[in-house]
Length: 201
Image (cartoon, rainbow, N blue to C red):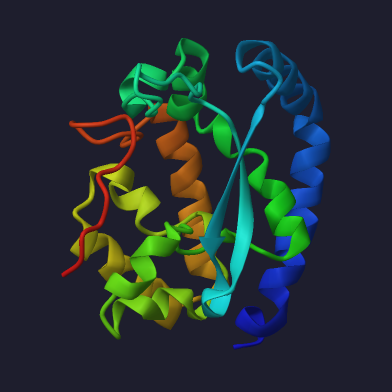
């Protein structure tokens, strides 16, 4: 309980700050590359629900361009994902800017991933409990299949995490995350470069 109420947040601040300092050369290099590839737009911002469903703006590196069809509609994800963006996704380097979200208090290093706001009205009373904690850069579902998981299983893991937060569980998830990143597992589903949308229960 002490870990959940205070020590977890302290570790978030310490580790995310150190990580940003160490990764600053990588952060700067990727930002410059994406600035030129994406017409001056290296970052992707999107409103997501966080703890207690409070909305915040998540920050990621922009892995897709803004190309549209003749009708002015954005092309499908797989047609807009750049070669460099694909590499960032596979290596999870596109997640680095979310360390800023952690410092701001919007996110935690570990917790249920922040999903789309449109899903809020689709959750069951049990599923929405995933918002009882700060969303994370990585989490239990990410180390157990990531985008390859079925939605129901993903939500089960999210709620399990909410009910069993501990230092040892977070440490285990962190170690498994490093392993998964090097193995490049589960970065996309078989049908799309991004996960299929949740359509309700």
